[in-house]
Amino acid sequence: MGLWDTITGRSRPKRANLDALFLVPSAAITLQTAAGLNPTGDGSVCFRAAAGAGFHQTQDEIVALLRGAADAPEVQISTDSYGFTWLQVHRDPDDTGGLCTDLHAVNTTLESEGFGPGLLCSLIPFADPSGRRVGLVYLYKKGTFYPFAPTGEQQRDNLLELQVRDTLRDELPIEPELSGWLALWGAPGL
Amino acid sequence: MARSRFVGDAGLTARMTTVMFLLGGLFVVLVVGLSLLVGMRAPGLGVLIGLGGIGVAVYQWANSDKVAMRAMRAREVTPEEAPELHGVIDRLCALADMPKPRVGIADTDVPNAFATGRSPDRAVVCVTTGILGMLTAEEMEGVLAHELSHVAHRDVLVMTVASSAGIAAGMLGQGARFGAFGFFGGRGRGNVGGMPVWLFVLLFSLAVYAVSFVLLRLLSRYRELAADRAGAYLTMRPDALASALTKITGGINQIPQRDLRQVSAASALCIVPAIGGISLKTLTATHPTLEQRLDQLAKIQAELSRPSS
Figure (cartoon, one colour):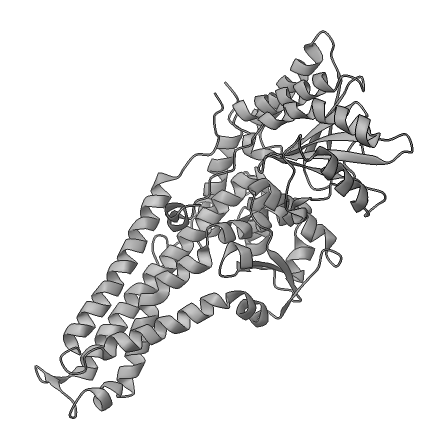
């Protein structure tokens, strides 16, 4: 915020930064080979639904767009206890590229309709054969990724998270502030 | 190309800028006027006292988080103590990309929330137990977004700077009353056209203080409206904030539940308050009326729900 914004008491909503999502497919391969974590085929976008008809129309258009494709993924919409909406997409676990394209389409549509400031994060879950799960979270407003590995109701596996960070350090922009690694308890797919 | 549903409010900006300009102008008038009045007798004294007043204000600003927390008997809570409150604030801060403030809870039944602190990094957002019990999760989020907007707008700093003229004038008035200028103003009391200097200083300071008092309240109301706007755009739910405001203000009875057809013809003419326009109450209130705030939120709601072309 500049001086003028401070004086006028105005903060502009942060625009989302969408481009880095296409870095995920190659990062998924690295996770697979280096840490044994495989994509589960799920992916979700978390956003704040605006009140009113305009948003519903946009959301319906997005779902129609995803379901209309020739190799349509499964699409599901749910709301969490914080009032955020999760749009979940499920594809074949090997098709991470297609999944990221879907997520990107959701984001660009929301942004082009003026709802970009309502985007919170995107989540792509991974799992290893022993059942450990870790989600790769993309924070739009910062344009950075961080891992989130819940192990229970309110517990997370910090060691695994740090391991994922070190594995992906060269491929993705990782959130440097550990305090910015927000937990997403009960996120779909984790 | 991506378009934004965020629409600036040129009117609010213009009004706010005008008020701030007038407050700044008032400060200049105070300093220049006093140096003309007193300067010949006790050079620099008026400025010195004014600076002392501003020093007190700066101290208050620097310690605003502690002072306000103590005044409200609030205590800071950890994420373990209040996980839901922290969770909501976490997400709002991620949505707005701002540093997370500390969180406090005050143990009182009065429904209230406030944010304070000298900078966004040192801010505290505090809610009372009363408001926690009264509002739903969505409404609470709207209120917290409003408070976070105050933090983002640096309202504590702006109001401290803006009140400097008033504080300095008030201090000078007090100094004059206790005869400070009589002591320091050279030999005895000077005369300006038959009236003692200290009386001039007193009247002048009082006048400046009165004007700045009204302007400050006006500015405070604009800042509230600005925080309402920013909060509504952050949560994208102006309706939640509106219903929270209605609950907190206790004005839930203002919008009647009764059917229009049940109300007799005579009383239907009386739903508009008898005294309208500017009264002393509207001039000195620190917060805009509920009606003004709901009005603005309704406009934002309409903007957000505009169908996509």
